[in-house]
Image 1: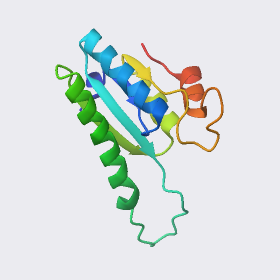
Image 2: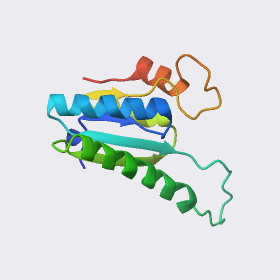
Image 3: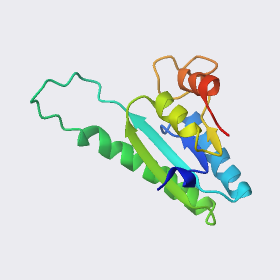
Image 4: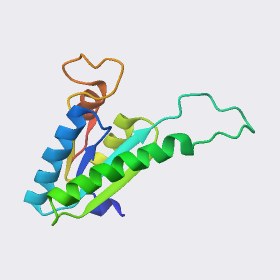
Amino acid sequence: MSLDELGVVVGYDGSLPAREALRWAASEAAGRGVPLTVCHAWDWPYHEWPGELVPLELVRRPAQRLVKAAATWAGRHHPGVAVNTLIDRGSPSALLTDLSAAAELIVVGSRGHGALQGMAVGSVSGHVVSRAAVR
């Protein structure tokens, strides 16, 4: 997938606000006639020591399953929309901000699975809104 094919990008972590964002993003992609890109960023929570074998698949596989399930839902409810998936290691807000320059639209939920779930706007959405470069 090239950056020209991102269309509407939605950050997805499986939370209720992320599912709502997925529904909205899929409808918006359908209405605009552009692809939908479901993305998820993950980070390994432990320090890696030189020479240490770290089973990154323990985190990567669940991330792949998560975006695949979201893409399957979007494809079933909006069969005319091309759906891409993208996972990356790192900060969700950094990934979405980086993708924003090539995306038609960035969609995020109001908050996700972070430690401060009670906040009115989550830290990822606040970061992306203040730094996105959507054209």
